[in-house]
Image (cartoon, rainbow, N blue to C red; front, side):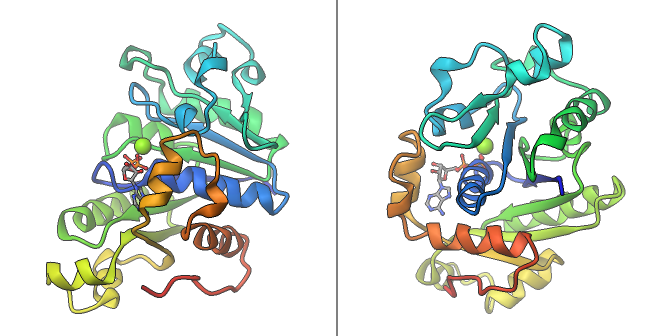
Length: 246
Ligand SMILES: Nc1ncnc2c1ncn2[C@@H]1O[C@H](COP(=O)(O)OP(=O)(O)O)[C@@H](O)[C@H]1O
Ligand SMILES: [Mg+2]
């Protein structure tokens, strides 16, 4: 099996990169071979989150331009054995066309169980590139109207691209804040409005944020880790609980 999954959101800052790293780590723990591709051209961050930025000489745009072979742009993460990373280009001048990016991913995916692609926010050209090789999608939202509108836009855009297998991740959820916001009756209303089945509910977890900003060391110490473990299983079709009920 090689399953290519794009992680997307309409609005920026919903937690796509955090989900990509947390999910990839969980999959690796379950002995899956994972390639994590940062496709946020010009705004890359996953190399920092995996404490691998010093090693990176080539990124995915070098691979498509022939500056290196595809495999030379794949780096093994320092902290997490068996997690491979391909970085996004540092500057926006190096945007990649959807068809060329799909060719690159197609040439690599045979060596992996999962290829996880971190998309830039929105439905622009960067998103189109990130989504091009994907079999399915994870749509990350926060439980608030602006973020949710973005989730609906992304789902609609994905469908128009032929990617109909999408699941919703509600991130940074805090029951008290949710109540104080007063926008929705309950979580069911959020899910109904998104029009996408829920696959994970991730708590607001400041420790997770601190760990991700510090090269991912100590990820086991965060409350959100169990949620990522369950998400990894659910992606593989195993029927386990969400792990966090909010
Ligand atoms: N569940 C969470 N709890 C607390 N902070 C989070 C959570 N998920 C993400 N964050 C923080 O929110 C910010 C944006 O997350 P990031 O993953 O970079 O979003 P995106 O990739 O969608 O722009 C970062 O500071 C990150 O550490
Ligand atoms: Mg990001």
